[in-house]
Image (tube, rainbow, N blue to C red; front, side):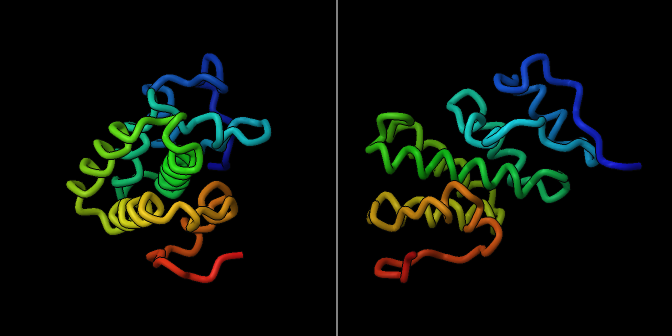
Length: 145
């Protein structure tokens, strides 16, 4: 079977949790057309679903879910928690650490490092998928572009 656009979204720019799960678990679906769809999905309403999907090794869109988590955390820290509250981030980090998934755990460690040292934020790494494509633990003073 070939990849196909997913017709399960009533409004692709405002998907529900159930629509996101259905899309992410469909191995043949592709992201809807449009620029920066990933950026629109890093919301408080969807973040718990993204965490569950990122921690599921059988999820075909696991890397995408992890990518959205990096966007979410990066936005929170770079806006000094105006977009997403510190309380919400802390709760999400606790849940992430409970998953015992290595990639979600790495996201949590990197997010904690970013909170401690906000200048670790690099748009390409946090919002364009760099930390998903090249998974690694960030360290203070690390070389950044």
